[in-house]
Image (cartoon, rainbow, N blue to C red):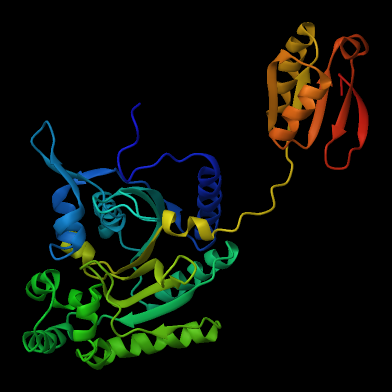
Length: 401
C-alpha cells in the first residue's frame, strides 16, 4: 500500500469539516475588513524567498523544498505566503498604480522540518496583507481583525507586541547587540551564524541555554527612534481603547528577515506549552527589496493545523432532505425530485429501492432534516409525506406543489 509522504496528510473527515468551516468564516471576517482574495502559485523562483525571507532564516537555510526543474530553473515550493503575495503585487504593477490594496489568502505551504503535532511538511496558512498604508492604525485594525476571528471561533489567546525599529534606528541597535554577543560564550551554531547574517534573529532562538545567555541583551525598545516610539505608543493606545489586553515582549522579533516596526504574536496555552498561533507585523521595505516601487506593507499569517483543534464548531444541526425509493419504479421519480430540489437545497439519496426503515437509518447518518420516501402508493396518488426529523411533524404534499 502506498502511504502519504512523511509530514503530509489527507484533508478528510472531521479535519476537513473544521477546515472548511474555518476558511469560510475567516474569509468572511477578512472581507468585512475590506480584504479581497488572492491566490499565488505554489511553485516560485527560489530567489524570491532568499531575497525576502532572508538567508539567515531557518526556512531558507534548512527547510525549503528546492529543486532544479526540467527547464534548468532554480525553483521551490512556497514555504510561506507573504513573499508570493508581494511578488504578485509587483507583477500586477499595483506598486506603480498607487492607492491601497488589501488581500487575504489561504492554501498549502511546504517546509522540510521534523513533523510533530500541529507542524507538518505540507501545512496550510491563512493570511492577510495590506499595501500602501503607512499609518500604524492599519496595524491596529489587522490585530483587531484577528481578535474578531479568535472570538468567533472561541479560541482563547493572549497578545504580545514589540517594535523592531526602522532603518534609521536599527544600525545603532545592531552594533550594540553584536558587541554584547561578542562578549559572551556558549551560543548555539544557529546563533553564531545569525550573529553574522542578521544579529537581531538571535533573540528568536529557541535554545534554552541561549535564552539564559540573552537575558541581559540590549533591548530593542531602548534603541528605537522617536518616530518608531511614537508609532508604538499609538498602537498601544488604540489597542487599549478597544479593550484588547497585550504584553510588550522586548525579545519578540518574528522569524523572518523582512519585518520592521510593529511585530505581534497571538499566543495560546491550549496547545501544550505557550505557543504562537498567529504572527505578523509591518514590512515597509519588502516591496522595494523585490524590485518594486517603495510601498509600505503589513500583515499576518496563521498555521491552520496549529489551531484547528481549538476551533469550536457550532452544534451539528440537521439540514437538507433525504429522499428514498421503496420500489424500482420509484427510483426515476426520486431522481427527478432530487435534481429539482438540489437547485436550492442539500439533498441526499440512494439509487436503489430499500425499506422505509433502511431509508430512515440512512437519513439519520447524513443528518437530514426533511425525509421523503416514495413507493408504489405515492406514485399512484402523486402525493408524498414530508417528515421533519427534528419535530417529527408530517405533512402531505402533492407532486405538482
